[in-house]
Image 1 (cartoon, rainbow, N blue to C red):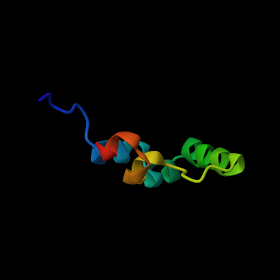
Image 2: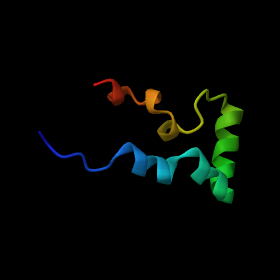
Image 3: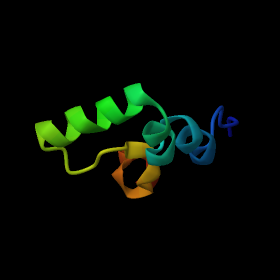
Image 4: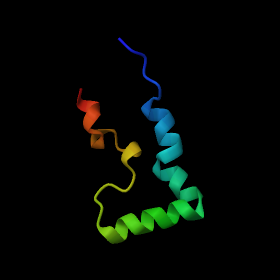
Length: 55
């Protein structure tokens, strides 16, 4: 079995909701996703949103 290169926790640290809220650009990204009507704003903070998580 191969080793996983990155874990979900480390991805959430860089792509998570709290991280996005810290920066101006991240808040703008969330604003764009809300305007577009995305149900999930940040995929890495929602472990069930990853299709590979069910494997």
